[in-house]
Structures are given as C-alpha cells and as structure tokens.
Length: 322
Image (cartoon, rainbow, N blue to C red; front, side, top):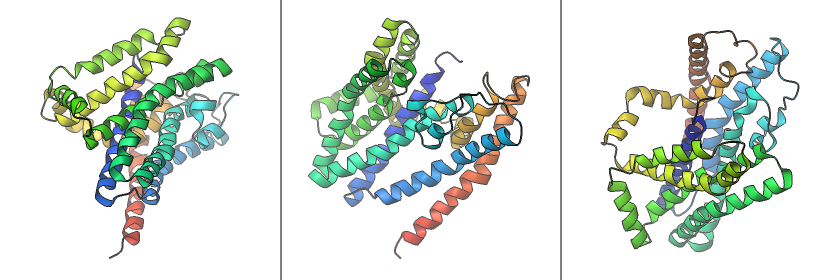
C-alpha cells in the first residue's frame, strides 16, 4: 500500500461533501427547497451504471473466466453499498468508500430538506449547518460504541463519515455567512498563503496515528479523524477561493482535469489490476497493469458513463415544463 494513500480517499470524501452541499444550498437559495427526486435521479444515473457494470464483469470473470476469488468473498455488501460495515474481499473491497459515499447521498439531502421545510430556507440551513458540525462530535462516539460492541477495528474505521460531514458543514457555513466573528476568521484563513500547509499537517497526522497499536488506534478514531477532516475541508475551501495561486493552478492542470473527469471509472477498474489478490495480473509488469486500468476505465467512461449521462439529460429535459 502507498503510505498515506487513504488520505486521497479522505480528500475525495471532503470534496464530495463540499460540492454536493454547495449545489444543494444553491438550489435551496434559488427555489426555496431541494428537489429530492431530481437529485436522486442524477446520482443514480451517475453512480450506478459504471459500478454495477464493474461488479458484473467480476462475476462473469469468476464464473466463465475461471478467476479464483477468495473463499470468503461476499457479494451482497458490495451490491447494497454496505461494504464499509460488513466487508468483503479485495476485488470488491474498494466499494467500502463508495458505500460511505452512497450512504451520504441517501441521508444528507433528506436531512437538509427536513430542516428547510421545518424552519424555512435561512433558519433551516443554519440548523443543518449546526447538525453537520455537531456530527463531528457524534461520529467519534459512534465509533467508540461500535468498537466496544464488535471489537472489530475494520468495521470501526469504516465509519469515517467525518470527511463528508466536514465538507458539508464548511460549505453551508460559507454560504450562510451568519456568524460574523467566525466568518472573519474564516476569511483570513482563505486569504492566507500558509493555509495549503494544513493538508501536509493532515497527512502527517494520518501517518502518525495509523496503525494497529491500541493507543494509536484509539487516538485516531476519537481525535485524529475529525481533526484531519476539518483540516482537509479548509484546504479544499482555500483551493476553491484561490484558483490563481500556484497550488490552485497545479490542481487545474489539463492532465489532472482529464484524470478527474475519468476518476470514477479509474477508481473502479484499478482494483482489478493493482494489488495483491488480483486473479490474473499478478505477474504483469506495472506498466501493463496501468495500461489495462486505462483501457478499462476509458471503455467504461465512453460506453457506460457517457450514455448514462445522456439518458439523464434526456429524462431531465422531458420532466422540465416548456
């Protein structure tokens, strides 16, 4: 495993929380509510087709291609987006992060909608912001309780909802602008050239407290995870606010933007060719594996993702009154 590799997944969680909540907040400000039907249609046609095509490919390979999957392979957690809780084996294992993401999609828009319908757009958004910040205190307690019941560290560390919560909380805080003193401090953070270093601090914390030692594990699930989440959320907000900075320009390089466009399919298919338990590519050179990932991801993007997005656009046009 790449040292600190999970930090990349954590950043993805923060970006997802920040982006999705920003879009929901903009819709709320413009229309006074969130169109949940439209939201779930968009998410379903964006996420499900490439994911279930990947699962189908693994099933076909195992059934007809003779791929030897581990005997403890479990399909139902991956099929139901519950891998982060119940676990499975390597070829389906990366669905743990997709499970957290999907659980966020299912719950957070509903929470935000309930708050807005109960207290109105402004007060409801403020309450939802407090819920998001407060969850950073609740999730460590949840992990402690789960570990106390199960004594299973893998399950416990699969409940890292802190990152999507931090991204969501910061997006709402930024949009509402209700707390002047805190907003002044936040504005200073966004203007500071030192803010990007918080990402390095987050990585250092992650590397320092990741491990199987009991005291490291305890500190990580209770303190480090929410702190890392907030630091990464500040970093993401800073990069959005400073696109002309060297860091912002680097993140907007054409090559990185191209990778970003195909990142979902890349993430899905890299699992088949990289890692210790791949069924057929163990002896392939690294370049061959990378080329295979690129070929499968490209095929997934053009043959599955883009048609699904075109279908989504057609459905949305049909539902929009002329």
